[in-house]
Image (cartoon, rainbow, N blue to C red):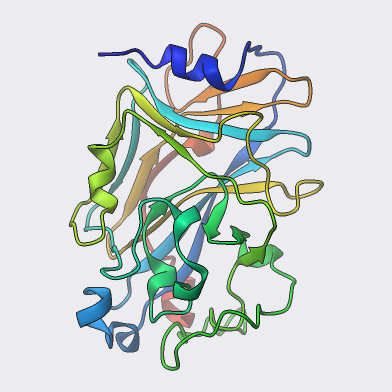
Length: 278
């Protein structure tokens, strides 16, 4: 079996561990599904009422870039739920960058589970809802009756504020040695875990930045919809403005590895406040 080290070497020519560009991992409760969202079950697949769509963002300091999420011997990457992840039967994809723009408004395709290095669909970057200040994209028309479960506390529906930012440049992920793992995100497959021991998904070259790279600089690396409790252990590599790369591991840092408490999430479910107000 090939080791992951040459793969990481291809992304960055050298690394150092004297800086700290990771602000943390943001887990956003993007949407909570309603009974009405399952109206297109024959086309979309079954979406359990109350399922939560989570977006996982790497929050970086300005000037830093996301390069890879990886699992290596001694540092496995794990993403799990106590219930299966939802995958849209018709428009679903493992790679958000190739989710067609015309499909983004197709019933609940926007809730599909996928991996990413920043994109949320063709021509669009993902942006946290709290930072989404732009007007709704008129080129994306949501089907009536879907994605209308309003968060009363925030005062908007997902069909009104979508967490999408149109961009000319869309970063594409490269998948290394995780083809078998990606089956859990297949169009019609049913799975509840992703465990990587020797592989990665990465943005080759310098890496990717958020929609607003000069301030918030948040890069979405995954979207996961599930009715269960979400947990993960993430290992990531980021590039600094000095041209060097920095590795962060979820547990047991060694040999100069950095770590951050937000790289580990244990059994997250819909918050009580959102359960009441969504």
